[in-house]
Length: 219
Ligand SMILES: [Ca+2]
Ligand SMILES: [Ca+2]
Ligand SMILES: [Ca+2]
Image 1 (cartoon, rainbow, N blue to C red):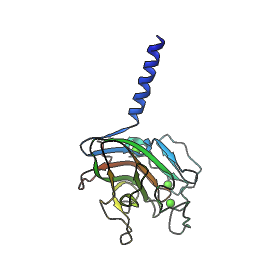
Image 2 (image 1 turned 120 degrees about the vertical axis):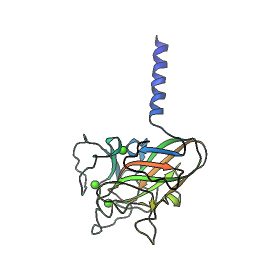
Image 3 (image 1 turned 90 degrees about the vertical axis):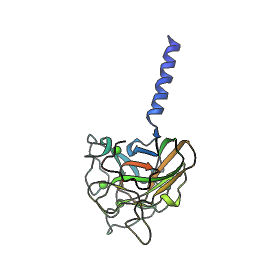
């Protein structure tokens, strides 16, 4: 009886591990942002989970929560947001960072069947000009091709972007954020802060350059 109990516990533990992992099939995978497995470097800014049942918070934030129409009813926001617009002071290493992987780093283990280059999309909600930049990475590396994901159009609603901000185009060049998955097997997709106040619902990775996510994009 004792032995049976231990096996059941081990089975439950392995099911739990599987439940937290995502699997890429046919060149596409979606990841709920609120499902991150670890968060580090979060002493100055931290990703907080929000849903319809989240109680009010007292962190600096210029807008209301946006759980309505979020995929799986939940999302995350990087708080406090002390730079909501251009008139607020930009403080590097506090409310902004161009150093990918240096602040508020999240990890998402994903099993990939298909190695190769993936176009990375983020479903995010922006209400201002200083809450719409994010860095992405893989396996604790931060390739130039996945820095400075930028949202520009479609404010005040959940919207998808895979645009990289450049010197010439502050709104970002569409369909340019990419990550290279080096082999089949487990890899860790990563997110880190660029601008505080960023609200992230979901990530989508696809090998199809022309793929355009729509709505919640349940897959
Ligand atoms: Ca906010
Ligand atoms: Ca901000
Ligand atoms: Ca979500």
